[in-house]
Image 1 (cartoon, one colour):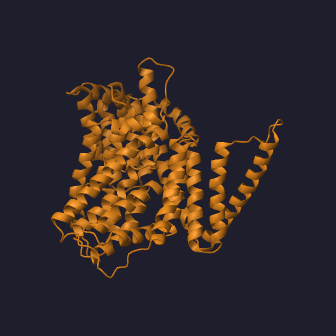
Image 2: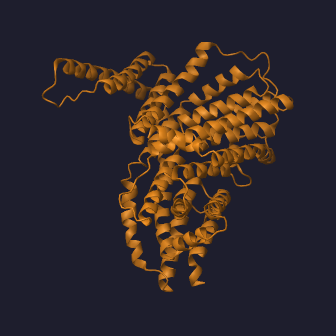
Image 3: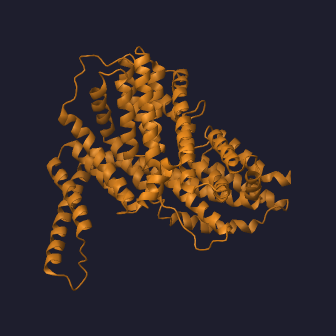
Length: 516
């Protein structure tokens, strides 16, 4: 038994998580127990735990992961300000007269919210509360409606900016560097979050296209499942559509554009997104609306002008043109700050920011506590010989590199029934991805195909997390059976999406190769 402590440790972890005990404490507790048990029986060097302090410091000083709380805050502000609700209502009325029109609007809104927030739980719950009752009142089959809402909500896993992609970028970069060291390279390359955001963009749009094609075909073949909305539902005016769609699109362009074009780091872009969400939320309340819009416009002008004609005011050799530009930048920045303060006043009065900060702190604490506990788990797992066992096992599977990846994909898919994407990303993937990279798989392509796989596990009965999110927010007439049966066609579409990326790797590798 002492030779299999690493395997027993993994089994104990799954049992502990399924018992309902908090995940972070389960991971850390199992690690500590097996560390001391391995030390007692003489199969582990307990001094390895001394490296835990370095891992904790590395986590707290990780510049990539700092972006997570800012992106979470951005999504929480958009949720609390009910911007998502307005977007769903407007798009639903715009497409409602088509067969499957409400379903199309839900998928499109899910894609926009995914690119604005990246938070799966919030998106599924919001659409379960807002869109699902509307679809049922329009005569949609509960199974079809539930499947569309669940699937659209999980787009936040693959469409950037996604919390999963940020964590995955850090994990894959570390694995890539480890693989290079094992190959004898000491001048190693790193991977950036921007590369993974760029790599996920086309596969994410492919999945959205597959969903839309399926809805259109099913609406044509089975119109009774997705009838058009009642004729008395007013279509939105052009100004309503623009006011609902343009602000989220501007926010997406500001965040993703600044990352993909190399104008800002992910952390800086996340800060831009948080400020943009604050301005959008403040403008929606109504007071000081003109000042907020002027301030937002001033910040956009400042970003463009400073990029075209940067000025360093601390230099002593500035010419007259640079001095005038610098002074104008200062005035524009003051105007932008006034707009931000006005927006902050509005959201504080409506208690939006307090609720958003509470949600942000809760989710961020969960994510970082899990990553910290996973660092201890992986230390003990390595100390018990688990890493060597997995590397040997993957390298000797039939089918070579392809067989190893297929088995890994199956394991990750099955683990998605029981574990959240954070636990899988920070516990399982660091153990298998270095070997897969050494076997010849491109690290960026590998990361994206694993991300789509994790997204699929969110949808798969009986333990898919999106199913639980929707079950908690769905009307009483929607049963668990409706939800389970409704997602089955979309699981097939997810598998088709994985196949596209598998057989056409350029879907994931072309954009980052061009932009980086």
